Amino acid sequence: MADADLVLEGGGVKGSGLVGAVTALTEHSDPYEFHRIAGTSAGAIVAGFLASGISAGQVKDIMDQLDFSRFEDRAGLLKHVPGLDDVSGLLIHEGLFAGEFMHTWISATMAAHGIHTWGDLKDDDPGSALPPEQQYRLVVIVSDVSRGLMLRLPWDYKPLLGIDPDKIPVADAIRASASIPFFFRPWQMPADSAVTSHDHIVCVDGGLLSNYPLSIFDRQDGKDSRWPTLGVKLSGQTTIRTDDWSPDSDNLALAKSLLGTMMSAHDSAYVDDPQATSRTIFVDTSPYQATDFHLTPADKTTLFTKGVGSGNKFLTTWDWAKWKSGDFNL
View 1 (cartoon, rainbow, N blue to C red):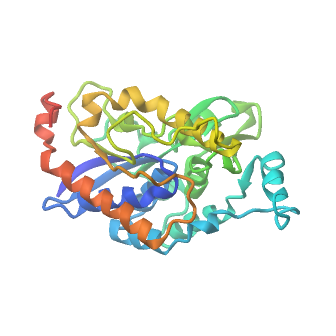
View 2: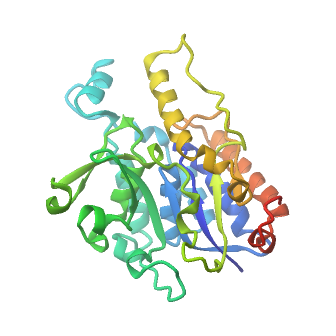
């Protein structure tokens, strides 16, 4: 059994690609066991399930059975009026979809495996370089748009929100991390007004500030790591995007392109670092879009298969001993 920490990039409905890569790692001849997992958006969903003790095979089944179109849960008085439902969603609720189904689905899936609050995910690890208040099996990246901050939950609940994470539902943070702007309503997260000046903050997709937080578990004390942190990105190994907005596109396409630019720019230079790319599994998920809520079963199979293939390719060259020595040309 090989030990590792894991970081999963956000990618909307393309999470099956993440599951495929994780499957390759866990079904390797020397299978990986993940001690801590971090993720953003779709990566946070898959990470949350894995941290709950759900196997990669079970996560695949869960994703296969999910009808993503149920994420399109419009709400309000105008939801049955064609055209006006989108207008009311954006202008009144700041998002096309309520996100209630997504939250319920995440919460129920984790609850079925005994995970409710962050207290259920505490990790008693005496050998960890992390302080006790950061010892959890899961970390979720969320964008606090009230104050322009990146939140690493549950780590930042107490210092930046003034609340005890062990009493907060894990599904709340994952739903917040997956709140794609314009598509899902922002998540209002409770806070101590003595810390934040308000009794809540407004949160959206963590990918706005860091869609791929690969360094989150890297030691900062100068000592050797006990095991590697591996990552999975839902793109080919390139910084060139092929789905950019053009003058002939509509406003929604422009909004999606702006989001894509913001969500990729923060981590792009960092991911071009050989130290990062050499421990990253790149899953080319083109031509699928993060907001394609009408994926077919065949689409999910294709994404999963691409993930498995990319994971297996990575494993043919990955060498932890060489990486530690500074040889990143794997």
